[in-house]
Image 1 (cartoon, one colour):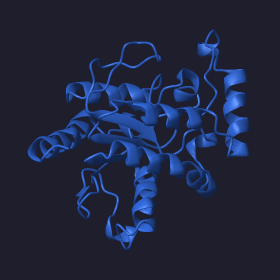
Image 2 (cartoon, one colour):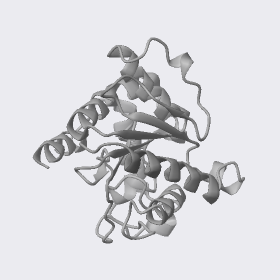
Image 3 (cartoon, helix red, strand yellow):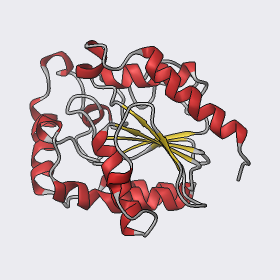
Image 4 (tube, helix red, strand yellow):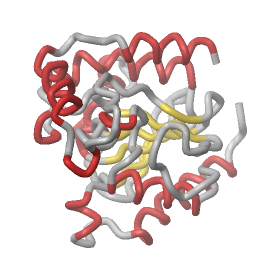
Amino acid sequence: MKALDQLNARIILCRKCPRLVTYRAKVAREKRLSFRDWDYWGKPVPGFGDPNAELLILGLAPAAHGGNRTGRVFTGDRSGDFLYQALYEAGFANQPTSTRRDDGLELMNAYVAAAVRCAPPANKPSPSEEANCRPYLEKELEILRPRALLALGAIAMRVYLGILKERGGIKSAAAFPFRHGASYEFSAGLPRLFVSYHPSQQNTFTGRLTEAMMAGVFGDIRKFLEGGSHR
């Protein structure tokens, strides 16, 4: 889709956040020893997936040695391994693995993006960095017009609810607490919000987020999409 291609080209060229520009370049230059032969992406990471998707999946930010290395969101790190396996089992992906941009992965009826498009130090973007990236998400929502949005983690959910509040879709974000497995319906024309813990190693290795829990969320999303009218 031309509009998405144009948006992604703008995202890749973005230099709004000096701290993130410096950090992403430093990581790409110094590399991790196990990836020393890689030519790191080292730029903002655009969204990826089906341009006609009814489901938009929103994460936090690219990992320093994941998306910042591969140039594709949730690709090349443990979070992505967990997420794309779940997407494959739920019928939203053609393969269960995601290792590099040219590995043949395709998403069906799903599009993946991040609230912040550059890898932040310690995986913690500042409020101003979140605000700088927010227009890109707003444009993706305008182009895709998804019927469902899955927020992976509290930050992704907060960013999305902030957009809804600013546009008059909700009065207060506090009315929609973060809780794994939660689902919230808004006014007509807005996507239904589904909520999950982020598939970070901290969550998946400790059992806070299990494969069964993730499968349950995607099962709920699948039922919602199949039960409603299509665009």
